[in-house]
Length: 285
Image (cartoon, rainbow, N blue to C red):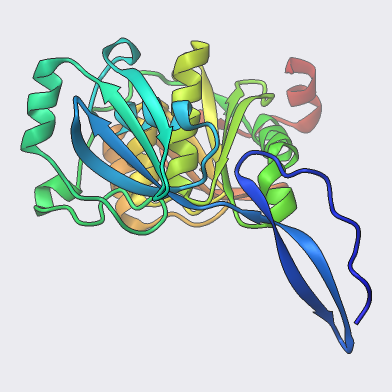
């Protein structure tokens, strides 16, 4: 076995260093490796526990606000305030304050969502609580194929935790010319999207004036969260589910899957994706 390798650079928020014995054929070496963090994150509204999510402990204020918005706990950013974020032995607790009327409505649909990373419907008590169909999105953006490719490339470059660990998903918000404005990462794909929605709210980005790119499959809940936030165009690098396609159709959400540099598959509301030649797309950027 070789001597230990030098310690790598300090890890970014959301990752830690752990000792690993790496094998390559007959050679072995001991080194410090970057590993993605995953901890329980508890949301407490008006002193009442609501959900525990397994998540990466980075960009937690964005996560808290985005989760409240995408889950319909509040409808406006102004209706939720973070009282404190506390690191406990067991994990992280985020205490939030919402209007009394929203707290009463929340109590009626209370769910226990402790479970897998970013699993937003785990433990739902009723079938009707597991599925939510948001109203149709109002915006009707147009995105060129060139802009979509540009956003995907920008998102790859923005994934710092993923580059070090290989264990995180990312969600990115791009302007209509394809330039990435924001990106967030998490071990859970739903959590990454919640963090992005929270970051967009904090930065004042209009969800009807750009488009969403994600490094995961397009599940029902990813489509639901996007449409709930008022986003009208979502592109995923992997496949959609049948339920996601059904929701996107009803919510007027353009759903693109298998988004790659050499093409994509358009499942719903394809009029928003424009087959603009590369030179024209570059000229408009």
